[in-house]
Image (cartoon, rainbow, N blue to C red):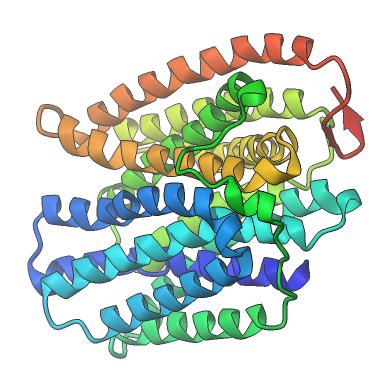
Length: 397
């Protein structure tokens, strides 16, 4: 389990490593705000169909084989960005990286589950979610630190570190045993989200919508924080933005180890409430130029995001039968990344008519409606689950 978790950590670092470099790319290539938005979003646009296809086919192709290929594609993407000499190479590198992480996301977690004994399933699911969040936070932090304090070949040196991390991950993968497949499992691989009908309603309401909300609201925070740092704190220090992202994401990971409350439904209810409250605080901090409000919002959002992510992934892994788990987990991340695209596209469209803060208010209203629905549905969900098919920290519904 430990080696697979380390691979997930390294790949998650690589997935967000390049984010602090966008401002440099904008200056070096004279990119407009629209081009930067496209550069950010094109990664997820290519990640989504890849995730859908591989989520359906990966079990038949062999999970370890798919993970290996995805890491190799990520290495190719990094090499492409290292050698880029024009804007087209920059966009192509982002497309390749989107394909790589789309192939990796659901498959890696499914492979982790296959390497784990049934008794450790809940622990493996929890640790996989923690590891993804830590990786997402550590990647930008390392890159931002290098850009600010080791300004040597800023468009190349951070990518060399990313390449080194990816090489370590592919070497680690070769030490993991191969997953075995039966002919029956190979046959069931039509391309679809593949959520079994018997759990579909509960999955969409208590797993898909919550993770969509997490990625949407954290995407709103990501959209606001760089502008806030520049205009309110009045600094161009790359490391400050990287540090805030790190606190937000790694705080979400740390929050998952808080033992109480123990019931999954209670934790996801509180998590989703904290999320929406925190995002309103962050947006208000931008409207009022309040640094204390920003930090309060970041810490509360870290707690809410951690609990929501933890239990939404927990339901995605525990509700389906084992053979359906790779598809369901891929569907979980598919919806998550749709949530990540929403702020980028939404802010881009709304800022044509309003300023950034007003645009974020509209997105917050949209997310608040979703949160109200999830809270209402959770009453039915808890009532419908009459037997303890899922447990968390030893707790039952």
